[in-house]
Length: 111
Image 1 (cartoon, one colour):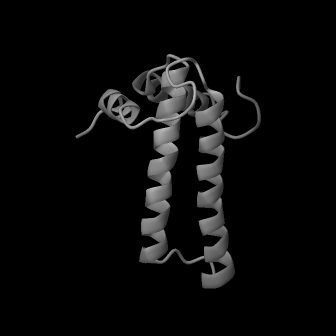
Image 2 (image 1 turned 90 degrees about the vertical axis):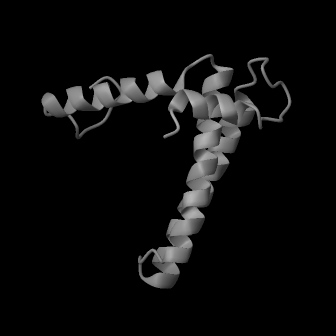
């Protein structure tokens, strides 16, 4: 199974954009927003055209877009000098603590 560290390293080998390895976090952040929008469009069209049912074909397209989202998360993390594995572990710990404290619902980053 591919680890986050391996994915992030391999994703970096396919990165081609202005300011690569120079702290250009804007390019991957914009790419992340764009790819996220593409997922939302596919889901919106499933609601509009298919009564909210996700067909196997649409699911396959969404999976590809999720892969693009993951790539941009990896690129943005690399530009910021962050490790995906640490981000993932920190996120799970944060959510577990919120659940334990009964604060999984609500607003704010520091619940």
